[in-house]
Image (tube, rainbow, N blue to C red):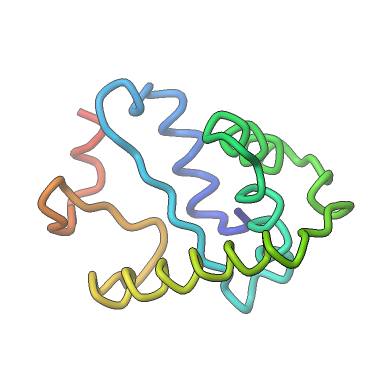
Amino acid sequence: PQCPFCQRFEKLAEKAHLADKYTIHIIFMPLSFHKHSEAMIYYILSANTNQEKAKRFKEILDGGDAWSKFTPTAKEKENIDKMISKSEKAATELGARGTPSFYDKNMNEIKNRGSIFK
């Protein structure tokens, strides 16, 4: 959630209505140089529905700070840590070298990122 490149993509994707054309999966990975990303991820992923998760993500992108007042339960933290571990494994297997990363339905990297806006 703190990655400036991902934030920029989210705004462009919303403006271009990419969710109407593509299935977009957001995989959160807390990077050490993004000081608050882990707390933000716990806040987002602790929501019960995908709609609520999307709402919390957008809230953070818009500068909201509700995440800073949130403390996950031990069970939520355990479950989210498992999701993060799977995300890190997937990124490694895909060879993702940056964020955001784009893949087609066959999990081949889309190198010409501008092509998704056409």
